[in-house]
Image (cartoon, helix red, strand yellow):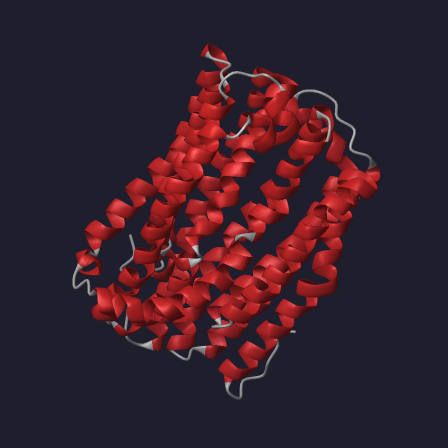
Length: 457
């Protein structure tokens, strides 16, 4: 296991070796994790679909999607902590690290407590049809209990995610990834057992949300046990002062992190409320097909965030320039390959996945493949912007893109259903973040290089 960044070599060459080593460890653990995650995706969705049926799967999608919508309560604090803590760790400033952690966790815990007091009574009292539309009218037992379980697990996970994000800052992503991998394997086992011994919606939702919560608990406990100084010296007055800039950056970061919910979960939620269960189930499966390559490949880019911030703090601009160019080239090649694969063989992949034919049409396949390529381009440059200290600008650009798309979802659904939704997603990247984020990264790198040749654009 590599040493913490605070213990890394003090010379530039030693720091480079530490960064490369931690990136490779993160990639190695991600490779193992993605195999397990891919297995979970391959097994979970078809298993839930076959065990719950068309109506049950629509209810399952509505419950999990609605729970994910409250993820906004994380306030983006975890992301806002990464760069300043990485810089403080590079200087070996334990006091500053503890102050940042306290300032980040305090509002998270407070907001989640208030959220629980507001959300749980609503779930227990509102009619199911009001909350979940057509999916709530299926008459399946346990929908309300499943919704409460999903919401409770999400609320508990939110403050833990703020602590777990510190692994990114300390270049220890591989530890959190491996813990998550074990819990994903447990999720897979739980879903298989649920399909064999119970067809209850509540059991499936519990198997889906329980293991990720367990992973956060274990990862956070291990991180804090290693760095006990993060819990020392709590000062409420100091927390109030330092909380303000963190909240400012966090809310902007939330705009980008929340994009996954608005881009993927919100359209699924809307479709399950207003369209037939067959169409909404097909759209949910199509969305998962896009999520697998996007989350897998952007997971390989994510470990660059903290090393880029570390390189900026140490003024290692040559290494920085090289890594940015390599990342861009790899993402472009991967995006083109995935676009061609989904366009040509998308229907076959879905049939092999869920075990029954499902015709998406070449237009939908092409748009899904194109969006995957564009999402990879956007996500890679967003990570680069974060590492370069352009978190506010990059997050704001993504937030504006996502909000415009989210507002348009009802109109797009009315105009052309899934095809129009995917077209809207592609246009939102092409006409805004697809060029805005590379421009921000280019400006940021030009400033950081201080005379180095800028080869980002």
